Image (cartoon, rainbow, N blue to C red; front, side, top):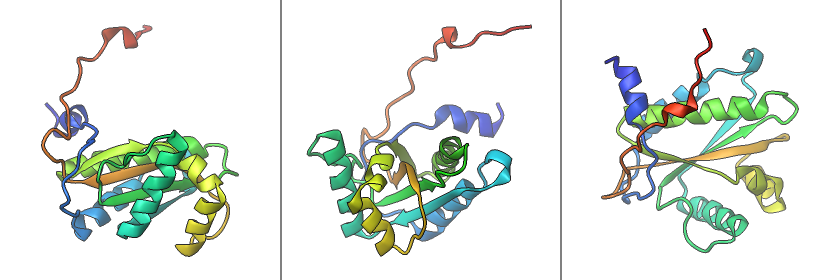
Length: 174
């Protein structure tokens, strides 16, 4: 089987991370893959914020949990969070951000790094606290949060096997 197809079939979301940090070289490669995602009319209207500062990761986790109405860590102990932002003035902004998220997660898998898409970035960065974080990080302009790509090394039981794919999800018209 083609190794790309095989990797796409094997990638799973990780929901339990060890405390081992992801090496800077791997993070850079993952980010680069995200930057090569397709975008509507080639506009590249996304912005990535790579967060490894433990205090900022903890703040994002707390904000995300509050939006969800929970108290646990929605980032599952991940040490790196890539926030994907998009220009809300672009008509394909959400789709462009989703493509970036897919590339980030697939690149992480290719490098042996666990990942998971965590939602609620839109609500986080629509808030005053989220806007203050962007200002603190030097991110200027109007941005809409698309998602958080959490990264780390899977702890035991962090990745579950894939469920069988449902054949009823495809219709062929010939």
